[in-house]
Image 1 (cartoon, rainbow, N blue to C red):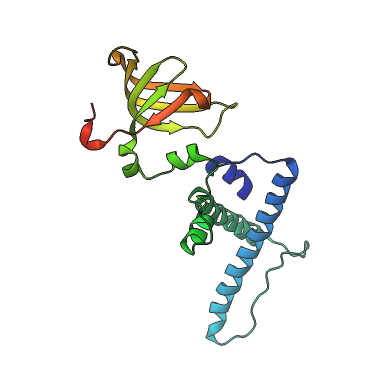
Image 2: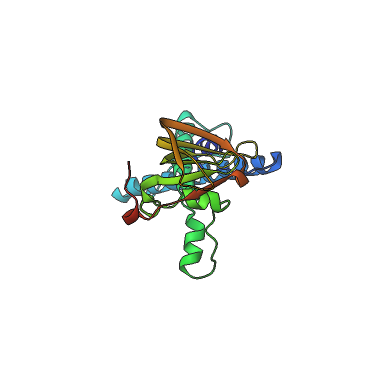
Length: 203
């Protein structure tokens, strides 16, 4: 369950069948261990009233696993998936090692991912120039969606876009404006430039 949720919501890297199996196995064990911890804490609190007999959770005894254990383990898996998704999305491990000066790596897959994961205030609120070098076209608008990789290409969704044609001997010519623009280009055909806010007003 944890693995399926993370495949939907967390950043992904290519992995083989063994890597997927190993992740599923580890997540399953962690989910049961997490529920065991919650159960122990819960029953320990109940026993503070005087009883020293703490009920046991029978995870590894197939004949004694009940609906409560299965339901509890499922909820624990859901909670674990949320925590792991945060850890993967925001690179908690790398941030910790950078905090203690043990690493300088951001933890992102590449600089494309690193850039798009930056806070909005470092990207002019998402407003930027996107140059399509294959067609000599420049888009100015708010980038609201991007893909890590799609069949080797990069995808972008730009809203409130102004589309310009680059000219060698004069300023770029405004061709048209569009509410939404979808781009699917090779990585080498796209470059992104964030204008200095003081020097460029948003449309």
